[in-house]
Image 1 (cartoon, rainbow, N blue to C red):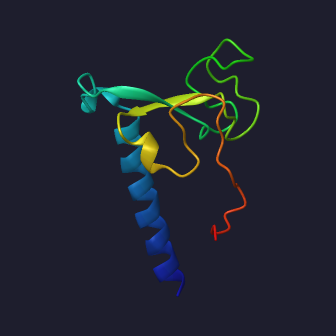
Image 2 (cartoon, one colour; image 1 turned 60 degrees about the vertical axis):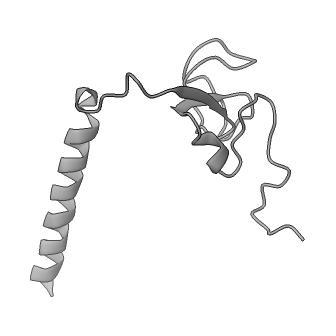
Length: 101
């Protein structure tokens, strides 16, 4: 059983190393012709791309899912994400993940 766990750990480590090497090399993905749009309300605290209504620099969101904080996403993707908005200051009607009736 120990050998199986070691094998799984080695595979997971290798997969993570490959992923990180690809993620760390942005030159490998040509995104120059991909249209971007601002997507509000889905960034994590401190992970927004640019200014908010209350702050002037990237990484300034003080809480997760702050309605006026945005990240850039490929055009058309934002509208497919629950809780996301194309306009600042709007937030989803319900955040408790209960189905609406």
